[in-house]
Image 1 (cartoon, rainbow, N blue to C red):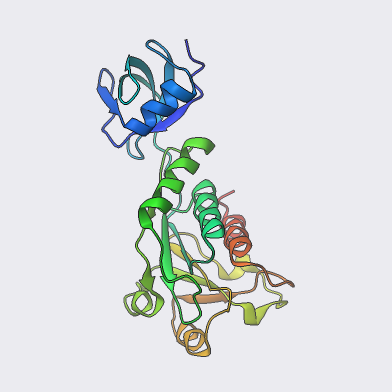
Image 2 (tube, rainbow, N blue to C red):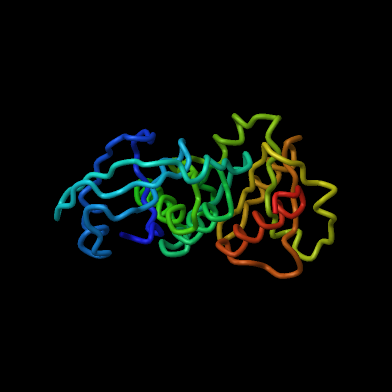
Length: 241
């Protein structure tokens, strides 16, 4: 029997007694790489129904089937926190998506700004990184990775009920008690591009009642570092820790 520590994301409803198919990549990983076979157990989740124990019913080189046994954990939803960020180099954008998933963002929204260096992303690839991060860190929920959208358009439709926390490099070194300015969910964190926000973008953000500018400390951080630091600071400030 397998040790049950392998976790797979399956985009199928899960319940006791159900039989679910594996994709070709999952079959290759489970049977070719991890050497599992009929009767071995794995953990599965779909982002909706929690985590379940399942056993291998059929094993093939390009396909396979699992039988769902029983639930091991209910769905654990993250707080209603979005991460908005301007894409950067490929590997560092991947890092942002992975860490945002691990830390508990419920939605990941790439945005294009005036100084965004990367104007193209592959949403399907970033979504796959979010799935892999959830598989590896024990998550039962996978955040949706949205298509790249212009920051200006998102701000025009912004809901006043969602606090928008934007990390402003112009405030580096400014002391503030984040517990006094950060509310709980719903909220969103905005990380600008490597070149920073333009003066027009900063001015637009500062006119929004829902927007709260913050400093991330006395040092300028790279965008990928800033994203993880900002989520951790928000969690500590609102008690999601």
